[in-house]
Length: 416
Image (cartoon, rainbow, N blue to C red):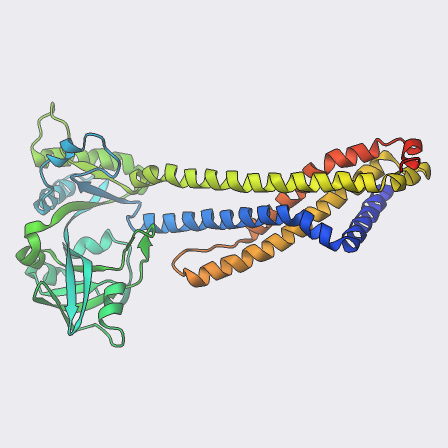
């Protein structure tokens, strides 16, 4: 064991000496690994960031909320069948809640009606467009995931009375009230004044496609009074126990069929959506990006490994006499094999350290340039990069090291 440890330590010293004496060649040889490690690290960071952003976006929908809508959250080929369905009405929430209350073992907690459309919002000389205006009831707060930066949500009295009050998203508040608090100020939506009673904390964007903070929420009666003509409605239903989501979904399907008055032989003319359905639709896209990225990074590392293998073969040829001399003095095949394996591994580790440094600086720059993208440069990623570097060194150095260890000492000493 002591002999083996000594051989390993001596091989590392020889490897370091060789890299110092051939600095330019070592850097150029490690360049393929540097590019490969940069690619691996950036791809790992990107995939992790996408996953974090994906999970954060999915969390907005809640994993214990069911959505009763006209359209399903998936791609459909027979879209015309869904187009001809009857619209979902906010009035459905009341009979659903009565049936939930009448069933003591119900898996459902509360049905919340919502209705939405896009409008502009004004305050003084400032205006923001493409804002989601949503009308709902005071119980909407139990189905949502947002917190308040300041202020509050409207209460039941304001909700039932249809008070001209609203809560606004972070982007709306930032655009219209950059240097003052919006609380108790009035904004104009389609010429109608609404007093701001709350500001929702920043929620970010949904998969980078649209902002979740460009929203205004108001009581449903006042929404229906001014905006109901072109609005889209749906019903949000809170589930008591998210581990029984399938049972809750089946129960809600039965309730909706009763509300719609559908006979047994007719198909559902509504869709019940959930977070998992959207996730299963987007997962293949995310996985395809990950597979394509890993293929590219794997190809980069393979090219780097071939380069190191080639240079290691050259090194074996250059030091054939040295190998012969060492064997003549009693060096074992294992010692020669270890020496060249460790040299190729040292080159790969050098490339790995340089690659990680470049990758970290690039991630830092990307994070500063695109602060909304969730960059996550983790310790696990560093460990994976180092393990990949070591494995690449062992793979690329094995064939040259094996050929060096099998050299005949007499032939090696006579090599010119």
